Length: 413
Length: 75
Image (cartoon, rainbow over all chains, first blue to last red; front, top):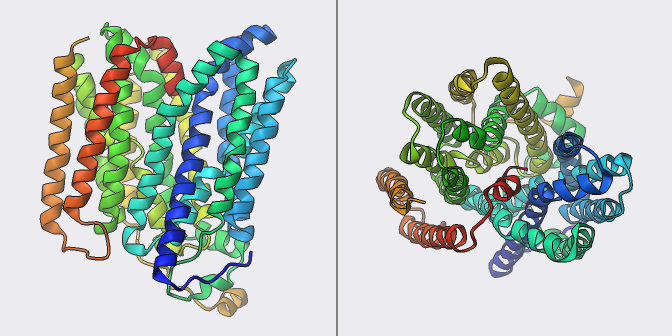
């Protein structure tokens, strides 16, 4: 993609602001719309006269496809520009929602949700990559944190809107309203295409192809350890969000505690993402990640052995909220620091795939262990062990920029 | 719903954040090209208060159905 070289500092700042706002809007709208899918469970299962497990399976595949498409869209973004890649994602979102609004059988349900998952997978990685590229190195991590906070905030805003639309206009019409909302994404896709590379160092990275960058990352110890750590993040998050309400019900706690536990997780998640994003610019990201995972492990252990009452549950939820998605600005920032900003979207997409696989195992293993042993005790201990494991995994990571051989030398080797 | 427990847990965790920032403030050198420590903290405090008051208002006034809320949050 041909890019215009911007040299005026004021113009650079304005361009960055446009890219940041567009990234926030894209992530906020797409994550918000995706989180509202659960609201279609009852109306669609009634319309198709199918069981809830079938809808649940379709949603699980949608999440998996979102993970698979993340590196693909990342690569498209790195090759053709973020504007074109997100535009393709937006078109897929529109087609899939139109298909979903006109479903007649389970094939339509699975087909539309596969397409929806595939289309929605690219936005987060591309937005983070574009902002990382355009931002100055000093504040990169903070701005990535702002994007993630916008995504969490979208959940609070868009989901109640979808709920209102379903109740007042019906589920099918609400999907048409979501198509209109998706159309607004086209504008932000255009603005996101303003993203430019702010890095001043001209390395061999600029000559690297996508396959060379992928090969380099997959054979790099730092990237593999980081991806492995991100698996643990997905595992923890989805286990807690899926099984915590049922766990609290088993502890005979009042029903408002589960609602407030999730609300405090959401609230402190926004603050924690901003906080760790800011700290990522001041301190070593890999040390912060190690500290974050060890704090999670200690928190799970303390919660496991402590008595379960209103106070302990709400304290646990609030602290967990701070550590919830704070891994994202640090992980994305480390990828940019080590490999440079050019292929950040694709490489973060690969890490995101690992995160989503971890999410799948967190949800599935939680249910399986409860069905087998009748309690979540083993699962809490697995979370503690994985937390400490992730701490150890992050220590040997070298967060400094990769010293590349010349491209010719790589090709000869 | 016990508001006392909710407010206490919010305050305890917020104190933890303040302590973390007061420690990190001493450990970092001022970075003139980026946002200052105090500026960031004040922005974070304002966002925290708005979000907490907003959450209290939404959870209390709109009488959210828990099951619906959980479906919205989890899936």
